[in-house]
Amino acid sequence: MSDLHRFLAEQATAVWDIDAPVDPRHELTALQHELDRAGRHPILLARQIRNLRGEPSGIPVVTNLTASRTLTARALGIPDHRDTARWFATRSRASIAPEVIAHDDAPVQQIVWRGAEASLHRLPVLTQHSGEPGPYLTAAHATTFDPDSGVDNTAIQRCWVQSAQRMTWFPYPTTHNMRNLRKFWDRGEPCPVAFWIGHHPAVLLGTQAKLRYPESHWGAAGGVLGAPLRVVPSLTHGEKIMVPADAEIVIEGFAPPGVYSADGPFGEYTGYLGAQVQSPVFDVTCITMRRDAIYHDYGSGLTDMLVPDNMAMEGKVYEIVKAVAPSLVNVHVPTEGRRFHAYLQLRNPGRGEARDALTAALAYRRLKTVIAVDEDVDIFSPEAMLWAVATRVQWSRDSIVIDGLSGSGLDPSIPEGASTASKMGIDATLPPPPRPGAPRAVPPVATVPEAAMRRAQALLQTAGDTDWPAE
Image (tube, rainbow, N blue to C red; front, side, top):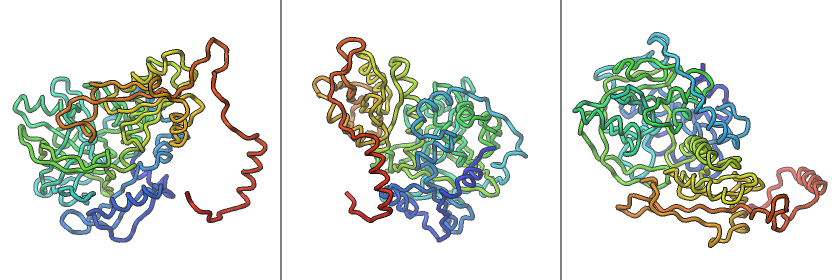
């Protein structure tokens, strides 16, 4: 059985167990910003933290859970984080049906709060950035279902805690959850929702798989986990909305029809505060949790939130591009580009194949810039990618600009009122040989003999930890 507790125990050396008091307003997020700047990504576990009543919560907060790409890959059972694209594309499609268990066997329903007891103020919800209106759930997986087919959907969507039993809920307009919400509202009915918080990172990534509509995420989560996900009927909605039995906390209730509230500004994955929007509201009916519950928070706009979804994007982009470009070897969605850039690595692409690959990738809504390189370029190295662009590209020959494609509404560069985006593909692959079997007409890369490299490495080892000037 895989859950958050087991993962933290297995990765104990990567956990910074903070036993000093930590303010839920800004302090943990400030620590994440400092760690990001230093390129360090320990898991943060804050044990002394207050709830929204200002009392000791008794529920610790974990964050930075997925800030390390290496650690996140290890959680999936992938030895090398560079292999996530092919692995994720395969495993998220290798659906494993969930296992339904009874209420008495579900850790997440060990404690049940109803009525006035079911207060959001009893939870240690964080306020992250200056300019935000208050505390937000940032790692809450909203689970709804399509009233026509009964098929459920799960997605991470932010919620601003406005009172003890009401919060906003922002399902982005193009999401499957918003489609489900509108179907209930069109019938004049409140939309049933269950928000679950905290689980093993493999489950968190599996439920971020990009699927068709309607299609349940439980099978994809099982595929990524490599075992059936244990689920249990929610107490408010019964079997219509199942929740992970080994999650930490579940918040159940309804989004009343036609009721909106101002929401935001909020720190988005772009690194900017997103504009205030009108969001549906959600009324709490019940809160359940484990006896030893841990509250999970994502650092919004930080690597903690970017890494897992970017890995899931790599799998989806790999799947899309491989269908038109068999030479595709790997895909990387770098955190430096937020979720707007992707790098494609190709092995001996045929004439026009690099452009086919670029065009296919640019059709993916979130991507705005895609660069294709050969197999000799390390797509996980920003220096190598810049080198390839600097030395293998002529803009008039190797760039593709396409206007009028769908883009992310969170992209701050899109002009106000625009409904489409302008995107660029860059072909940084080497020119193909003039004829089959002929060498490529490019200069050789400057290298040194392997024996000299080994001697240089040995010499560096003798220098130890000498404090030489940084760049």
